Image (spheres, rainbow, N blue to C red):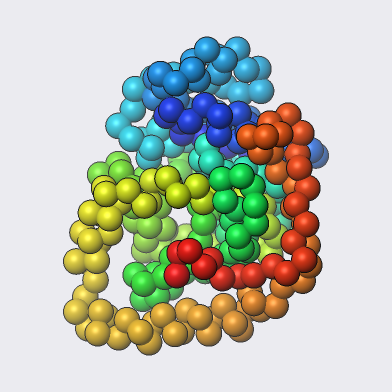
Length: 278
């Protein structure tokens, strides 16, 4: 089983170096790391083409999701995923996902967990994944894409690429398409990745807000009227799945202050609440 990890890149040189390091030190699995860089002018091109740990393609694209689609078309792996520049894999992530797929051959999409940090790697929260439902997903998106892994056939047989009409909410509409096509999904109770909440993430920018408003208009009126009930059900699902019963733990990541060696962060009191995104 071979992994293909796609990283779309544009003017994120410092973050990209950390992302690449977190993939390169994965052990016990075969993988390729494809970086799709949209002709960055921030110094990325000074080092990326020479980095032997990745296959770098420097070419203009029509946005992040077009870059991911291009990477998926080039991918040779059995399991595909995409990891943004401000995201990292935790040690042993790909090995755990490989074992889950091997034990569950009918599953085509694996949803794992993510740890959220600030831009300096300081702990913010744990985010478990849940299987999305057609009604709740409009109000609560229960997945971070850094912890989604898919079998090759989702892209190359089912043809479920990202819709490049969306520049910021492509993840949401892609997951909707997986659900509409009844693609088999399962949750892997392993935390595989780290997402850096830098305060400058794409989903906080004006175009993302515009696309959110456009997407909201797609919700049926009757469903909007029951919004609070679906949010409550989402929270009860999280409670039922034990998301709030966390124990002291730690994680190891690369930081801008330590780009060549993982730094271990102790978390004596973990939380499942993302306080600055409530």
